[in-house]
Length: 84
Length: 506
Ligand SMILES: Cc1cc2nc3c(=O)[nH]c(=O)nc-3n(C[C@H](O)[C@H](O)[C@H](O)COP(=O)(O)OP(=O)(O)OC[C@H]3O[C@@H](n4cnc5c(N)ncnc54)[C@H](O)[C@@H]3O)c2cc1C
Image 1: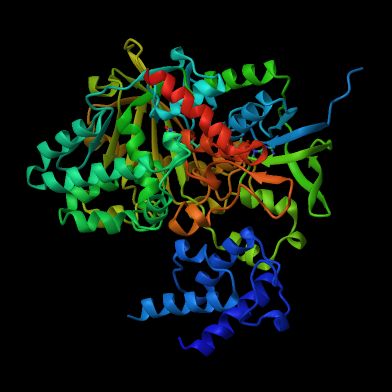
Image 2 (image 1 turned 60 degrees about the vertical axis):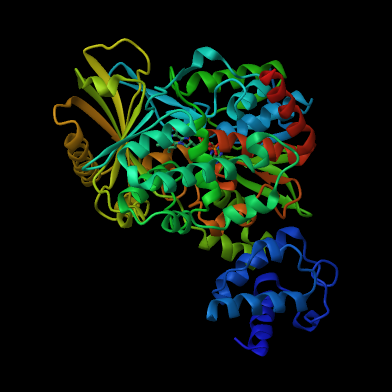
């Protein structure tokens, strides 16, 4: 998956799964403050992305993710792990 | 006229061991607690029933780590419900006998004894056996609520909750029979080796190797002990009180509604019912689509078929204080899908309920085997005791299949009469979903950091029970402790438990 399709897929998941208005989804947006998610949502988000994008997220790394940009990075890393 | 008190600090739904544990922890901290249980008897899977003049157990046959100073013993002692007379230690020289078609192994008390027992059967696999059981022990010991230690190695826990059992076993040995032996305990958590986190499997295995104990008179005395302690703290239990819904207001449960049209209120609600049922009471409108999606994708563990039999002069081996697991295959590949059963029965688990009592001419035996819920699905809408003949025919056919497997190992077993239970019994008596025995299917994608609960989006609603942590009486009790800890703080609880452990070691 290239960066663009990852951004699209993650953003779509956040709109569909968490009812976040699309205009809020900028790379610098922070999950907990700007997107008003909390630790419960973070787990739902991890599981949701795993299912929608058919990837396996490293839970240990996911717990340190704070911004949307970092979500894209992590998903990119996980999907390239799958491709290798 | 006495009026029913309906307002409490904490309302607890269900009276399984997880709910009873949470209730006890909170009541002893001074909270007013009321338990709502749908069935007329308390205890969830700990309850027993009588047939043919004998007692049979439903989901409490044996437990691990229950010798003085060991984790389950410490927890029950802390709760004030431990009583020597309830338990009987199973044969230290073979509490579980795994009978495969061409060989048999005994699991013995103590890691080194089991290593030796397996090495006698697989002399060329000494190193793999040694490594496997030591890893089991080291990983189990890393869990904070196992050894009750507030200082713990979270990276080990996380790593091994994310690594499938089969990945580790396949790297350790090429021997297919030995792999099958390592996978045999999967029936205790209900998850196939490719789906279960090694950490979960390690806890189940290690606790039994620490020590294995049977219930002398089934699980009922433990339930009664809990109720006695709860009563002394002023807690109440309302039986035959099925929760049917919540009224949600401003992100909180405002009232809990029951089938007998009572309304209860409380500062906190803890649900020990299945999480899917609990979230259905919260209502779709209060759940984000991602959580709804997650709930619908979480699978259920398989159902278990039960045979409750009266045998005449059973073989002496079955009267020892042990359990028999009889398997129809020793090929590890068959074990990889054993807990998503289709038609064939791979294994049956036999235990004699008269643990430690003198042999009589007739003896009750319980035999359990995983079974596919799909076979029973078409009867879900039918009423218990009024199900169509086809249902009883199906049960009879499955029972005969299981008994023919058991007879391969015990050809002379003479069963005089038997009764059966199906996954539909789990739905009726325990409110299980799809007849599952162990709640949700505890695969890697639904355990560890991905587990549901204890907290929920509804701020005063917490979850507890086997579906929120791991199946088994001890893990379910731990889930209750953890849920209570969400209200009063978990660290002080762990410290108190650690003190009990230290005292018992002095
Ligand atoms: C056949 C079988 C054998 C087992 N053998 C063993 C064993 O030998 N050793 C071991 O450690 N574990 C064993 N287990 C597993 C163990 O029994 C369970 O993991 C444990 O008892 C689960 O406890 P719990 O508190 O999560 O739930 P449960 O015991 O299922 O309790 C849930 C309670 O909630 C109640 N409830 C549900 N819906 C409602 C509602 N709407 N309103 C009010 N109340 C409701 C139910 O009636 C029930 O009482 C076995 C399980 C099975 C099925």
